[in-house]
Image 1 (cartoon, helix red, strand yellow):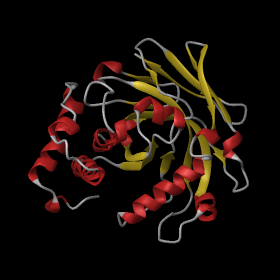
Image 2 (cartoon, one colour):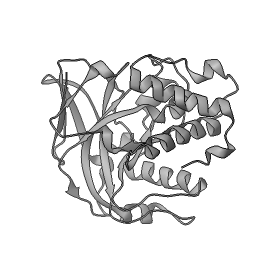
Image 3 (tube, rainbow, N blue to C red):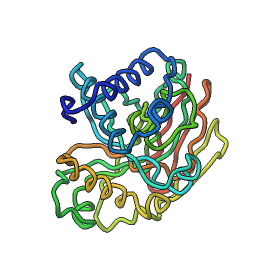
Length: 265
């Protein structure tokens, strides 16, 4: 991750503040209010510093998430470009498992067409062909997003610093991916307590979830790193996120992929 030795003290304090908010369940002030000059590059450095601390404390990285890749999510959040964060082992929920909303500040849920890599994806020559060849499996996923600022009136920089609003995720049974599969045509329906709540297609995510993967690989290359075999990649929601309320059951289903579900308690 980042070289925190290059980071000013306020940046390290910001990373610690976000981590404290996550652990305590008490909201922190958006960084854009404390530092109106905050840049996107600085926000990613805050994120990296916070993740460094979690990895040093025994956390294990299992993949990456890409957010704000659909028009619906960009309109909902008032932004015009994607962001990314990392997925850690303690964020993983079993399919059908329970997520405790009491430890979260403003949880929302979104359905995605997730990917698992079968080979590394890194370097200056990453293109669509290489990105598709690197994918081993595809599956439905439900991602629980949260904001350690307590509400969603935040900027893109705020979200990035907050690990792209990552919180929890569950994945369905994977299906082998073939490079000629058209993920853009996959339809996903989301039911909350057996009522259809929202839906979308894979093409709603930058035209194809693999395009989001390519965006991520190129961004990581610019940081001197890349993606690795075994990484899970959540490429972004096919619909606008919906509030996750205690006592509800959420299921994402598709004619082409096994369903994934979780319960909020």
